[in-house]
Length: 194
Image (cartoon, rainbow, N blue to C red; front, side):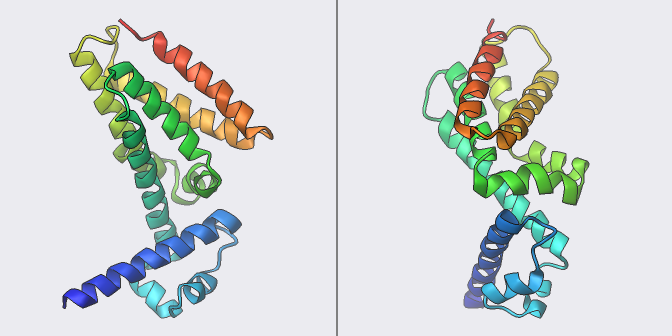
C-alpha cells in the first residue's frame, strides 16, 4: 500500500514537471495533453485520472510555481536578522523569481488568463502575499513601520511587485529593468520606516 502511494506521488510529480516545461515553452494554449502524457511516459487516461482537465493540470502547475516562489522569498528573507532587510530581500526575491523564464509565462501571463484573475489572486494571497503580510505584522509589532493599515500596505506592495514583474518581463534588457525595479522598491519601502 505504501509503495502504491509513493508511485502515485512520483507519477503526479513527474506530470507536474513535464507539464511545467510544456506550459513554459509553448504556453497554455499550445500545450497538448497527449504530448505531456507521452513525455511523462503515461497514457492520456492516466493523466486524466490524476487531473480532470488541462485546466486542472495547469492549476496544479501554477500552484507549484507559486509555492516555489514563496519558499524562495522566505529563504532570501531569512538571510538577515534585520526586519527591514528581511522585507526588502523578500520583495526583491519575489520580483526576481517571478520574471525568471521558468516562471514568467505560467505565473504572469497564462495564470490570470487561464484561471481568471480572482483564482490567480487567491493563489497569490495564499503564498507570497501571506508572507508579506506576516512580515509587515511583525514589523508593526516591533514599531518599525509608520502607522498604516497592514492590509492596505500588503495589497499595495503586492500590486507594485506584480506590476514590476510584468513590466520587467516585457523589457528587452531584463537585467537592467530588474535593477531599476530593485532601486524603486528599495526607495518605496524606505518611505514606510517609522
